Length: 160
Image (tube, rainbow, N blue to C red; front, side, top):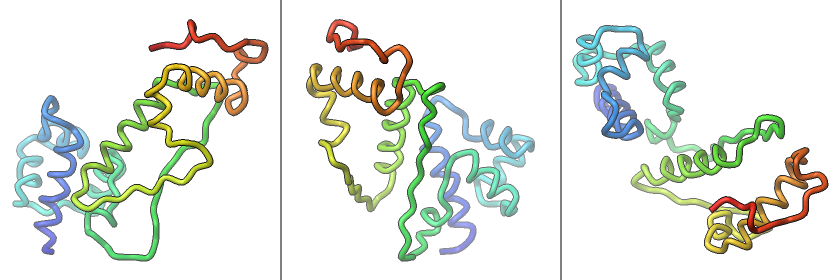
């Protein structure tokens, strides 16, 4: 694949990630601190992006260059964050999981291997009682949330 084709693929990936409500040109111009005219030239492949610009874009949009270039290696890449009980927000966590699944779904060829000692996370939310229990259990044991130290489980307090 040519470098121009890779560059076009890069901007297509960013466009897909941004969605229709955000202007790709404005976003690229802001990310690279360039004019919209310069951004258009890069997006159309008329001007090659520099390594510095590639780094800025890959970092900003959490793009794996291996995935972009379809590099065949024997490595398995993953990302994650350690949970900080003081700043953890369950709703933000669920949004993050949704974004990760959407990201995986953006590839033509994709596989997801889910290894755990429990049923997959997505199945918890099909049953309110199970979801409420998991929410309570995670806060009490894994996160050790201060509000859950002496708290008893209550389905009435679980958000829909």
